[in-house]
Length: 119
Image 1 (spheres, rainbow, N blue to C red):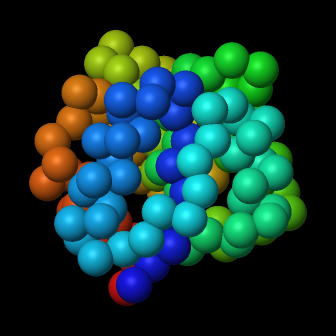
Image 2 (image 1 turned 45 degrees about the vertical axis):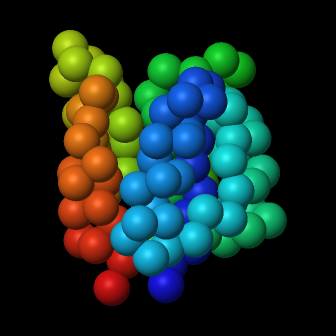
Image 3 (image 1 turned 90 degrees about the horizontal axis):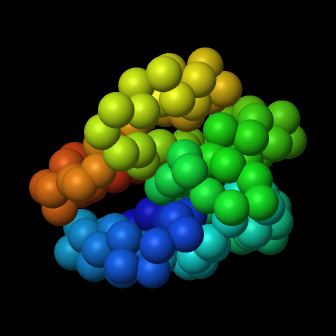
């Protein structure tokens, strides 16, 4: 069972991801609404996997990935992006994200990403 951190400024999307994580038999150990919160929670909780939105207030997901990967190079981060953010997805992958899911996403795609990165 993996421990997962969810980072998205939209509560509805955090709930949707959390439901899929639970169905896949994993545990949500924390939720953050901003990139800054994500960096702090990652340091405190050291999750097995992070689902990170790109567009958020304070610090965006790409900057958060860079901060996390600097201190934790083995961090497994999956980016969540809206359609039409292809350039930002590429930036996120270059910053160290392992995968990305395009919103609106299917629950099966979330579970597939979890299974791929937590084994």
